[in-house]
Image 1 (cartoon, rainbow, N blue to C red):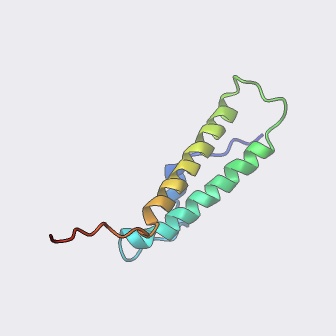
Image 2 (tube, rainbow, N blue to C red; image 1 turned 90 degrees about the vertical axis):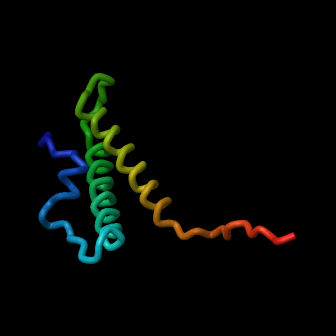
Amino acid sequence: MQFMKSNIETCLSQPDAPQPVDGPASALPSIRARLELEKRRIFEEIKNYPRPIAGCDQHFNRLLELRNRICQELDRLAESTKPLTEKPPTVGLA
């Protein structure tokens, strides 16, 4: 099985990745797209990993770790870009 790089930083810094033009906010769609692409690649590699899977298989364990990190980053990104739905409490003058 050919070893593929599973490095989030490499994925995000690849030259074919769209480059932001208007600062950090404009980079979010690009970052999200690259993370989703890497997540799909890792899920596919895990799905096609040869059986049986030994508990001491370092490459497979690394794939699981990367999958979890990417999912956590996507969750954080979604949370940070979620619009504020609650209004701050108002203080009445007595």
